[in-house]
Length: 112
Image (cartoon, rainbow, N blue to C red; front, side, top):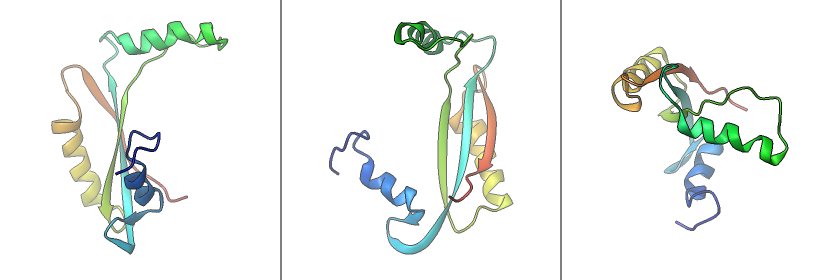
């Protein structure tokens, strides 16, 4: 895979952005977005570093920054309730650390 300024994953992302499977240009993929954030009581050094950098580049008016993670899960065909239930299970058991993180959102990604 060629390096393209997108972390080398541009070719893979292209398939996602076209909403088709890499193996079949005719098969539509559904996507589920899972968002995970640090619990409020957990220190967020990355968010603090971003907050400190914003004024240095002339961006003011922000009072806090918290950095989280976003996962996109692809499924064959449209997203169903069963897919959302499986995504919720993955989010609580694999995608997040429930001791220090909260799953804040699990939702289908709407087509463009």
